[in-house]
Length: 458
Picture 1 (cartoon, rainbow, N blue to C red):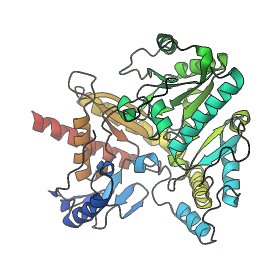
Picture 2: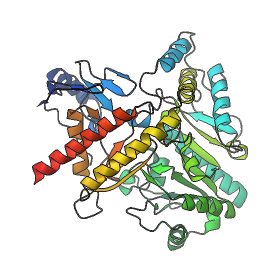
Picture 3: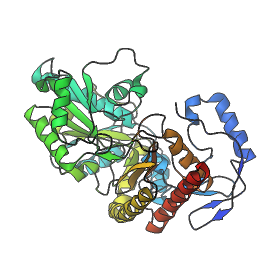
Picture 4: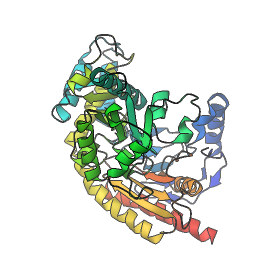
């Protein structure tokens, strides 16, 4: 189980830089009192993040109401690709809400018309239909439904197997957790679907065999007939790392799906909209999926997600057979349109490449300084992670990852705490508008914290 951050005030050293400002007690008594009110009425599962009450957020910074400022390495869990509180997005939300038009169910609205056109124009050729939703898990659930329905339509009732990968995370709803590759995440489900199976993810770290033969061998070991596979779904990168599959593996996977008439789906909820240094993360592999899921960075603000794919896939259901209450909400669509405009206008994809290159170099140096406790330092663009391990092993060190994030928080660097399963990773995912000097300052905080933890332990 993930740890709960204590509500114990810590007297911190005063820090004031261009990107961080911390002083006094963290959390202070007012913060503790407010969080205690929340904890009395809110589910305990919501206690897993550092004890800060966000008052406002701008660009790459998060502020409380007491004069403290954190450099944000979380993007609010990879949401704010364009940056926090972007003026253009705020104005789009205000203008739409003042119209006023707040919701339309499945009836068309102008922002929805414009957003769907824009998204299809940005997708690879041939992926020409979009279905808008609210959350990432809604998107992956929809992908499961589409893959299975298409499989049975083309190959009969037996063509219903969904293949995903170990350590994958696709959301917290029942279908999403069944295709997820973390056993602890689906332990609550009594009757697991036997046709949702996982194969090893070729991360090159804990799974050293990165050949595509591992995929076919794993299917054979689980007695899966390849012709019964309706679809394969993979995160573009596994969020617990981040871990990326080799380019050639991805290309062989595309060919395998074509050969066996299975749909290939990328879960782009974390990786889209410039995060990996390409507009769509799967462009790193030079392949085009049959459909993909998107969310998080789509609006840099409000809840909106979706699925984009080939027309014959997205159109398999008729009118009113596949809908969602908040699909294409006009305010969310307005925010998404403004967000995409900012990403394109400010060249944030290119900035992710530039700053990400410097970030990877510095993280490699940190890994070299602490080789016994950092097993891997993977990154692409502006998503990166230091995978903490128990000394001399590849076993995740969740406790150490938690301590690093907690101590960084007390020094003005904000990251989200790792879940109690997965990779034991210190995840680094700042807004794409971050500057190189800000990114390197954050890395130095991580290095200082690691050095202090090692010194205190020896």
